[in-house]
Length: 442
Image (cartoon, rainbow, N blue to C red; front, side):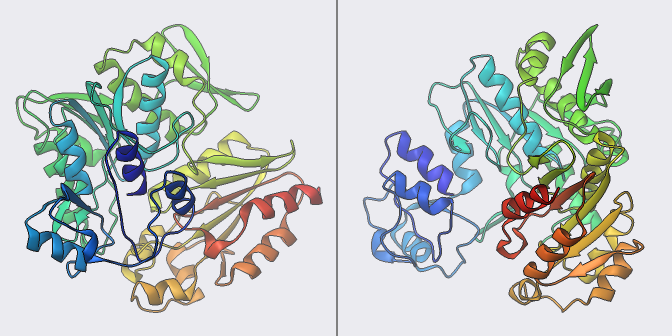
C-alpha cells in the first residue's frame, strides 16, 4: 500500500493514508515523500466530499471507521487490485501468478523491459534492483506487468486479487496448496487458478510450466480462443560456481542460480517474447539480473562460507531453495533454517505437507514463536509436533530467537553454508549480524 501511495504522489496526486501501525521501511519511505500520517489510527474526518476515491488494503476491517465514512458519503471505493486494473484497463496487462516463483518471474520481466528501454506499469511483491518503488504507473506506458497474488482483494471484496486484473497474457508457474485460512482444501485452492485462466481476456495467452501435472490438466480445458504456451527447463551448466545458460548456440553466464530459478527464467523468456523482446535481447539483459529482495539472496561470503536468505515458506519452495544451494556448492555442508510464520505453515493439518522438504539439508532447523500462534488464533504447537510433521532425522526446533542465534553460531564452521528461509523475520533476529559473526569465526 505504501508503494502505491508513493507512486500516486509521484504522479502529482494528493495522497493521504491511515494505519494503526507503520513499520520500517514503510515509515521512512513515506516520511521522505511527506506522506507519513501525523498520528496512527483511523480518523474518519480525513474522508470528505472532496475525496476522489478510497483505496482499501486487507488490514482494514469491514468496521473500519474511515471505510464506513466513505460508504456513507458515496465515495468510490477500490481494493488495491481494483485500482491497478482501473489505471491499466486500456493497456496490455501481463499477470504472473503461481504458488511460487511469481515475484522472481515478474522481476525478471521488469529488468529485461527496462534494459530494452520499454515504458511499462508494474507491481511486484519485493524490491527489485534498478527500481526505487514496487509500484509504477505511467500514463504513456502501453503495457502493465503485475505480480498476481491469489490472496483475497480486501475485507469488502473476497475475490482473489489476480482475478481482478483480467490479463491479456497470464502466466502460472505452479500450483501447490497454500493460504489454508481462505482456501481450506486443496481442491478449492486449485479452483482459483482455473478461474484465473477463465479470466484471461478474449484471444489472450496462457503461459504455464509444463512439468506441473496440475497445470497440464488445467491447460487441457482452456477456452478455444486462448493460446497456450508451455515452458520447461532450459539447458544450463554450473561452471566454477556460475550458472551458464546455453541457448541458440550461445552461452550466457547468470548472477542467479538453482533449477527453480532457471525454470522462472524460462517463463519470463516466453512472456518477453510475446512482448516483442528477442531471445538475444532477453538473455543479454538477464545476465545482469541479480534477483529480487530476499529471493535466494546471498547475504555474505568469504570464499569458504556463504549465508543466504530466502522468502521461502511453502513446502515446494523449501525443497527448491535447499536443492539450489546444495547444487551450487555440492562440496559444502548446508545448515538450513526455516521459520514457521504463515497461517498455513502453523496449522496442524497443513504442517504435514512439509514432510521430507528439508531432507537435502545436512543440518535442519525449524523456528517458530508461540506468540505468532496466539496472534493468528491457532492451536499451540510443540517441538514434537514439528519433528513428526517434517520427518527429518535430527531436526532441531527452536522457539527463542536468541537461542537460535547462539546455536547457529556455535555449530557453524569453515566449509559450510547457511540458508535462512522465512516470510517473516525470525522475531526480529539480526541475520546480517549473525552472518558477520559466522564469517569472523573462520
